Amino acid sequence: MKKPNELTIIEAREKIKEGKLTITQLVKSCLEQIKQTDKKINAFITVCEKRALEKAKKFEQILKENPKITEKKPLFGIPVAVKDNFCTKGIKTTAASKILENFVPPYDATVVEKLKKAGAIIIGKTNMDAWAHGSSTETSDFGPTKNPHDLSRVPGGSSGGSAAAVAAHQTIAAIGSETAGSIRQPAAWCGVVGLKPTYGRVSRWGLIAMASSLDSPGPITKTVADAALLLRVIAGKDLRDATTLPNPVPNYEESLEQISPSKITLGIPKEYFLPEMEKEVKEAVERAIKTLKKIGFRMKEVSVLNPKYSIAVYTIIQRAEVSSNLARYDGIRYGRSREFFGKEAKRRIMLGTYVLSAGYYDRYYAKAQKVRKLICQDFERIFSQVDALVAPTSPYLPLKLGQGKDEPMFGEKQDVLVEASSLAGLPGISINCASPQKLPVGLQIIAGQKKEELVLQIAYQYEKGKD
Amino acid sequence: MKKKSLTINHLAKLAHLKIKEEKEKLAKQLKETIEYINILKEIDTTKIPPAFGSLDLKNVSREDKVQESLSPSKVLENAPKKRDGYFVVPRIRWEE
Image 1 (cartoon, one colour):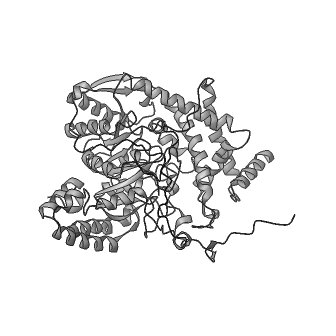
Image 2: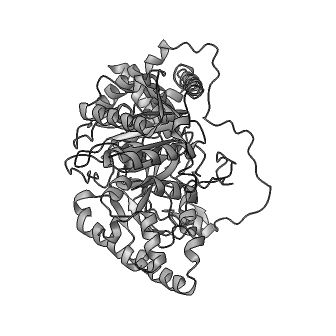
Image 3: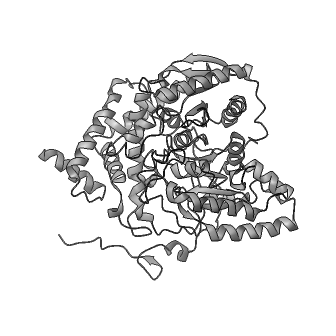
């Protein structure tokens, strides 16, 4: 039988509803797992032990008085870990940087507010690449997170702490944020489900900004159904973030089964099967494609814009937005002075300043914005031919710690297969497609803007149909 | 070599960063990155408008209504130096 911390959101919710599990037992079970494993994994920067236990006790009392509360609050009593770049009222929020080591926000990010409103219990704040700059969680000023499947390897990043915490059953689910790859890639390398919604589907208010035209908060979970549930809780228009979409939020859980695979055509972008792709990744993804065919999906090979251009566009736009966003850290209103920026942040600020400076703006920044338009147009063309794309999330297996040291574009090259869809603001999910007992490999499914439902439905079919 | 260091110094000044011992290494890394991003020259973008984002939302506004916001004491809570309800900033005026 599964231990409480090993349950999914949906399983834990049922058990709580049926009275087979108390909220305190569930919270304690996660805290116990953190105590036993986090010295090695280092997925958390802050564990909210006292707060979480107090909340659990309080919630149990509420449940006793009002057993129907679980119907109104879809995450009632469920422990959720939150990446440490989301502001949490009264809980230290560092973005894994020494600059914010002692920063305690006086307000909650919209995502956190929504989680709390749905009844979630914040179990802790997870480790990440400092300022989300990286794809390995090694640039954290508080030490790297290790991959729970192999402690000599990185969990991916930047939401590496969130993905590792879910994989190691230290929490029931987690929240991450993605600029280009930061949810999907660590989910791939930790063998969990990571969903990057359409840009604007989830509010960025209270999320420590990296690249504002790209940042998208999203769920990291054990199953597709949990991702659907969590997305429904955190999505929606927010007056405090003018880029949020006005469209109503569908009930992603209820529509999970509403798909006829034989009516759906999945595109396989041949440019995403790079020559440098590792053998294990290729095998796992090819097997997943066979499974999708067996389920009944129609498959079609397609050709897309070479992803090497996305690396360049992403590098320019992201560095430019980073240099502007990090300008606010002056040590006057909150946080420490700019001398506390790590090497990676400095490197990014410098390049961003360069591409935005007089005489270089047109050559780099304006040019990148135009190629970004071409990338958007390329996806429009593709999605007139197929309903969604399936491809590897990363060309590589989880790297060994230290492998990307001092490589100035390490993260960008790691994220080569997720950058284009991020630049176009598209939703994408990563789901494990490796055989059991093997190192995880992510299969990603990408669809047009606002098509989270379709992405979840395809992933759900795959999850059910894989051996 | 001298010119490159000057550029680094200038960028660091613009970005309010102090770059000391790692200057040469940083210059080399920036050069590598710039060489890579130059591949965009291969793409013809003459008639392409820039994409400033991925969404087509325009002129998003909300009702002009007073809403609750953080109190001054909450806003100042994390400031290392404050006085009489203000942030204390370093002296900006100086004599030439």
